Image (cartoon, rainbow over all chains, first blue to last red):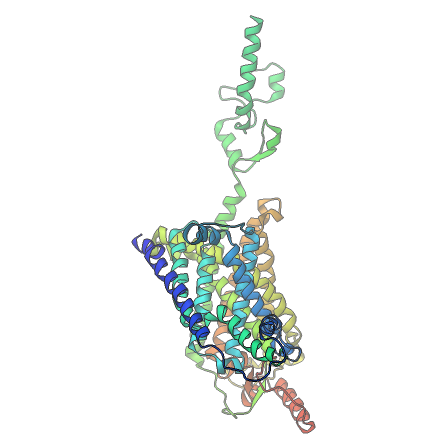
Length: 214
Length: 344
């Protein structure tokens, strides 16, 4: 039992601290890099370009669609599924209310939670397979990508195995895997959950000034 | 006096109401005899306790005095029969089948060894599976493995794991296996249906398959003609599809028991579900072995999407000739063919 107490107590606080501090440190670090001075006369405003790029890139350019449709489908399946499970599943809301935020919100029905989890699993399996099977993806992937994918899969899997909510050790196993995931997060490409806004925004600003948004 | 009698009647009625709900047994004395004024049976009534409980044990329905409860079955007798079949022949012979499958794979590996590319590698690659085909295959494979492991724990865990890890840990493992099995089951159904449409056409049996059977395939030496899939692969595909559909239908019934109105369907579903799984799992072990380390060059088709030209000629000559002819026809025209294994 002492292991469970450590996992649900000090280790949780350690993991949460590393996650929050690490993510802030990375984001502030990126923002502090600033952007190169552009001496050209702007043809249009930069900020609208950033906003435009942020939303336009939610879908691929027409010419890339056929090449990326599997990636697109699996990507949305996984990310939306994970987001919904993370923030709208009753056990997660209860945990966030009790341990983090002090307030909760309406949980989705259990069947919707299960379907979202299934969508997330399907998407993640397809995405990881594409990473190892597509020659280009294989070339540009390194250990960090695989570790990030597998840690996410394990955190999701242990959560699914604890669905009955009747066993303390299964819940502790899920929490442990989530804690490892949280500690790994700021030092890995899992950071794209936050940095995609910065990278798309940066590109959007550059091209926005030129009056085009790719 | 009359008021006292009325009070006694009311009190009796008040008590009889709830008692009648929890007294589901039929009246011991026949209402007909009782109505005729005959004494209610012999010293033990018309029916002895042993006879009564035997009827209960056989699963007979009894009328409850509260009509809202309808007919009630005190002991679900078929449940005991179901349990004895599931924990008896299904578990015993199914377990033996899985072990025989595993043993056959090990024996084949020891006796035959790795099936090499006899002509050696040419270095020239020909496309075998598109990205979509490979994605579907690996998706179904991943989910199948998760379901097989969790299913085997559910069926055999009490015999294998329980004595080793103890009841407390086994409770956690069994709960985890059941939750995982229920969650991944629907994903298997979706994957199976997509796989059926993606692969069915090339898995239709052809005349060349008869020659392959006569020659015993390539597994024991010699050469047998084959299109994209040989007879063994086609048989495995249809076995997966057939057992997969059975597993899907029975799995849906078990996951949504409200779909049927009697327990019988659920009991039959669990037996059929376990039997179908125990038929396909040993064959899947053979497929995994041959597709990975058993046959040189086979795995590349499913990972990279391409295979060596000699591998294709030795294992799927009819298909290889067709593909290479098409590639040769395209080349002079300068048709831009996608790089082998490229994403589609």
